Length: 103
Image (cartoon, rainbow, N blue to C red; front, side, top):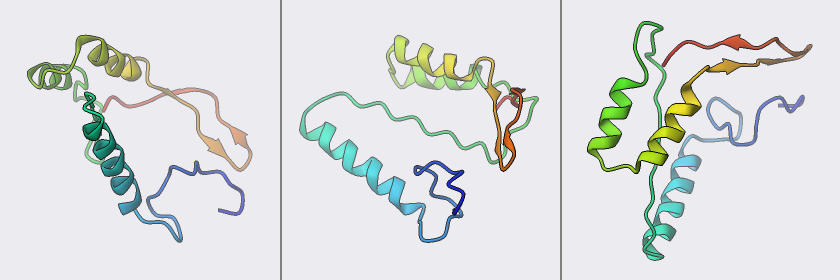
């Protein structure tokens, strides 16, 4: 905390923060969109049981199409997964880019 390495939007496992806060924020935003009669698409991904052998694209893509998510939004979400390169911020600076595990 004192080194300010974590983004302010990181709530889990932080002193003085609760994971209920992001849920409340999402609810308030959704209520505003409903009030304004605007379409709202929400995406949440649980990667706690992810394995590198699981294809991350096919299942998501099929589910989103069944739910009627617009094609351009589906493509945007799929594009966010492609490549999946990550940089880790350490006390000594950033690491080189690493290829992440498919989730």
